[in-house]
Structure formats: structure tokens, C-alpha cells
Image (tube, rainbow over all chains, first blue to last red; front, side):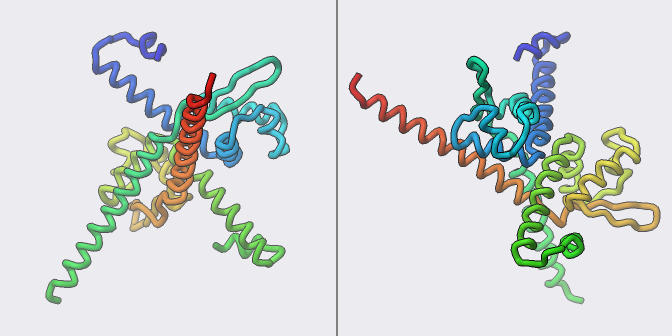
Length: 132
Length: 132
């Protein structure tokens, strides 16, 4: 992570931790934004079945190469896909990153909602038991 | 879902299904976009601990009421939060919607990545067994 070393004015362990937290929070923001488009979600699903060139990705969407390149760049920026150029052809594949961080946040949120419902249920039970 | 009935020119079961798929896809897009902001994710976490007014939500962020209202509206549009006005005070709470649809898409994606890794592993094993 070269940008951390470059941006580091106070090289204490805490400032490194803070920069890393900031970096990962920004990654989460950008990943949610990258997934907020149905074309980009379909690109990921398509690449799950094997690598593809920009042309092969654009074709089923009836999309221009310029349009598809924009989507690919957004996914590449959050490391959800990797591209490799060989001659005039750019081939796309999944990775190196997966969605573990996003999955963790959502699971935490859903768990919190469940616990809230449980507490609400317990409260109802207790209220029922009380004399009017 | 009033907009479905209003937008329906061909009232066959398939056009209803198509409109519902479109509606739910758009909901997924808007939900990912709503979650792409750290303030909005923190608002959801805060409301998990109990309801809050716009003023109570704005305060810890040092944010203007107008700024907070914008975030609240975006979360309200995807039904992740509900607001209720009583007098001059608007109180926010979680729901009625949760993140089950988003969670399902992400779990499907992660599962696909795992299966891909498994297939790659099997291929490596088979290649190792072959005579040079």
C-alpha cells in the first residue's frame, strides 16, 4: 500500500491504523457504489463463468465498447476484476478481491435487526404477563 | 404497489411478473447506492440502538439538519427507515425493509467464487497426476 507510506506525516502505529481504517472504509463505499448498477452486477456474474474480452462483455448488452470500458474500469478500481492486455485485446477476469467485507457488514446489520425483534418479542411477552 | 397498476398497459400475468422483477432490481440498485455512504451506514447502526429525531442523528456527525434530512430521505426511499412527524419533530426508526435481497445476491456471488476456486483446485490436482 504505497499511498499509505507516501501520505504518512506522523509515522506512529495509530496513524497507520487510522489510515488503514480510512482506506478500507473508502473501499467499502466504492464497492457498494460499484454494485449499484445492474450491468456491473451482470458483468461479475458473467465473469464467474470464465474470462471475457471487453467486446465479448459488451455484445450481449448491445453496449458500445466505450460504455463497457467505463463499467470495467469502475470494477477494476475496487479490485473486483483484473484486466490484462495482450495486443489489441483486453481480457477481464474476476478478483483479486471478493465481497467478504461487504458481506460482513450486511450480516452484522441483519443480526442486529433480528436481536431487536427478539427484544421486542420478549417485551411483548412480559407485558402480556402483567396484570391489567 | 400503486405504480405497477398505473403503469400496466398489458395486464397479462407475465407483464406483472416483469414489472415486479424490474421493481425489485431497481430497489437493489437504489439500496446498494444508499449503502455507499459511511454516514448512511452509521445512521442505520445508530437506529439499531433505538429511534432518533433528525436533530439527534445530526448532532454526533456535526452535520446541518438539511444535510441529515437528505441522507434520511435516501434511506426512507428504499424503506430501510421510516419517519414519523409529530409536531415539529421528525422521529426515525428502522424498517419496514431489511437487507435480505442484497444479502442473497452477495452470498450467491461468494458461493460462485468458492466453486470456481474448487474447480481450479481439482484441475491442478488432475494436472499433477499426469505424467510429464
